[in-house]
Length: 275
Image (cartoon, rainbow, N blue to C red):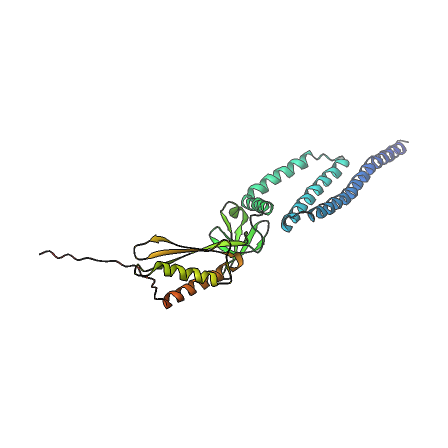
């Protein structure tokens, strides 16, 4: 009788256990399935929302990835709670792990934060020619950690975003036009008016020179060995260097034709003999 009673009691306990935890297991599975579908829906909504914005693609992917990870962690915690498992210790473990990882990856997280700031503020974009952190080049790629430049001599420079975001950045491609300043030195024996006319004619004759604003050519300095004439002309940004080199060559050629010399630095030494 005792054996039959024990078996009956064990069977009742097994049924009660199955009912209790079977329901919880079913709730946990339902939470996981519905939550997984909800996460997919949220990601789809975010992607469609980002299509209507001008955010960088790298930033869009990063935001979606962060949302995806956070929602999945929250989903697992909810499923464990439905099973009756205390999640207090799990949350504390996640927090401790997050602190440890953040301390170990301090520099990388700084670069990540810098990348997010740059992608949000957009001080420059891919294809721009910039000068930053002692380097100049065309921006090839902006990712979450680094920015890659290609220098004029075809080198690739990878700059950490955390370092780049705290530096002064000069974007030469931001504006459609730029002002070019060139200086020419002529001898004190030459006619400055003739030199000014030659410089102005060379500028106006070039197809890349913009006439609005008008070119500026004036004497700006009387130096030790030369009279300095400054020319300022406006040009489209993509034509800047072509016009720069063409004008240097053309002005020198016209100076030679008209007998205008570009003097070297000179030093007059006066010797006084006593007696």
